Length: 380
Ligand code: PMP
Image (cartoon, rainbow, N blue to C red; front, side, top):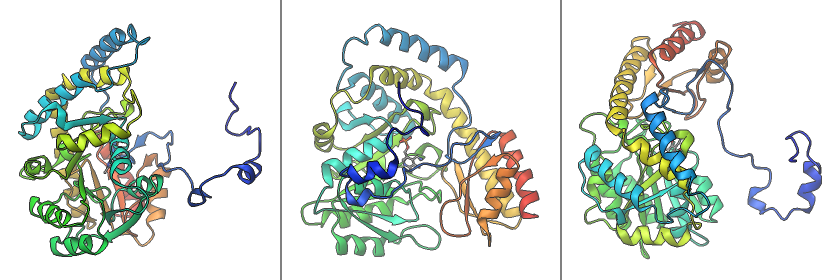
């Protein structure tokens, strides 16, 4: 029987004295937002809509079929899933790909860890531009890669000239760019990504540019996907996830698109059979329902735009968002606002530059509860 968390067999301090923990991990806390049981959870950019009964039924049927094969290891190259993802991206982004250009893992977090395992490492540098997703430095730390964070502009965009200069200065082997960015919601214009790719092409020894499109499906009309830049850029990797648009955060499925040679490098560092047969079955069943799920993404986008307009109408600042969340402020004491909302059953995220808070787009009822609570707490 395993010990409950509060019944450690050895006291933590005694364990620390004998465990050869890597010094750079000493005293660190695991990453993760609070998981609190409150009525309105708008803090981790989940899709507020659970899978519909039709999706649940399809998943259940396919998982039952997969269960009958669980004595065998799963298809280690998950070819059927890669083929389905190619078809999904053809419809979603209008790009024409082959399965050898697709990689998948347990969430896009694992996809990006694979990238750092293959292209980072001791003596190498990974780079991004803050404020951005706080897991990036952790991938670097866990793969003993040096970490450098440049800055985004005041409007949370990236100046192409300054970004290219920073890449020339630090000569990273990996550059991570979230677009749309978390926590700001900012998408990068194609010209900026192209400027980064041009600078990366000059880095001695090579540099992989990762465009993290975890929120890609929520981009506003006219905002391009970096998938359109894959042709002619063998060092570009575009990361996506089923956690957000597909409402499948609990299934842990992320994927990436790049040139076949880049994917081959990831195959070397992955653990054997890293994507379980159950996970593959769940992902494939959900992909069959892509049209229905994408319609829901459309209504979340509309909700997001309405929320930005409402926040601005109340005299607050709200960053433009291409994602399923909004960064807003400015508050002299953002913690007090966060706490006031929580006291009213609404959990959002205290993240980003000082004075700002981030709220995920929920159902209309959840958004209404957030608005009512905010009006009270912030005296709007
Ligand atoms: N990238 C960004 C920018 C994110 O915000 C997140 C999740 N919050 C992820 C990647 C990872 O998501 P997952 O591992 O669920 O695919």
